[in-house]
Length: 221
Image (cartoon, rainbow, N blue to C red):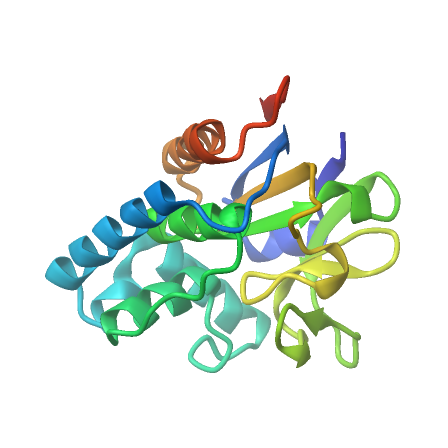
């Protein structure tokens, strides 16, 4: 079990931060047809409810964008992942099909508007993750993005360095088809504990439907 610490720096920036984490043994697969039916249904719902400007007002997205600005980052250049995914749908573009674990986390992120980190727990260094703010020149390789500038972004760090931001998680700790132990972190910069908990419960439902391993255990904390 990883210890997750909210640094004093982050507590000063966002004293209302509410988070939840899910530790689970999983069986990942390349593709789940039923999961993608759920994703398609949510996409149609978004198209009927939102415009690209409207999604900035979704509580979780609005709060994450605010934290970016407070930390000195332009949220329109480095978009939180939930916003980027929903924008892609509203533009009529298909979401990338990665694998079942990544796809179900993307679904949960879009449904609630929170940026969610999904990690292969066996790839962490040490037993502690600390949420702080990215520094100038801090090396960080985003998944599928190459080296990105995380100065001014909220960032989780393990003993080796950064592993997750609301814009992109790190290549070093990403999930793949060999992943059996995962840690999923929900970041509620809006401080809405009830919604964060609902998001965590929804993820657990998705894990049981689409990625539960034989004898697998799912724990929320």
